Image (cartoon, rainbow, N blue to C red):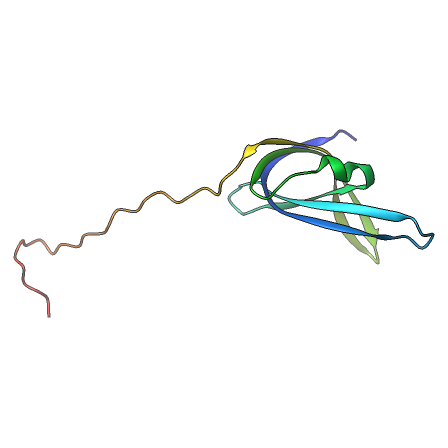
Length: 117
């Protein structure tokens, strides 16, 4: 399967670690990437093992992630999996701000200073 590239802003970074039943340690880092699309798509990209050290990013950074799409079935339900291969920081991002709003003016067609009540 060909890798997929995803660009966006890092929304959150979640680190996890533990031990297997055989006593081996494991590490996992999930990077939540906000693609900035109209419907607020948040893509959780997971890095395992040695790939965790490559995913050294901070919240708010603009990144390009190379990942593999996958999935698995469990009890008749299917779960997608976005496995990170590498991540590149493109720069510091910022949350886009709304454009300035002009104050509204309401007129009733006349220029007198009479109040309506």
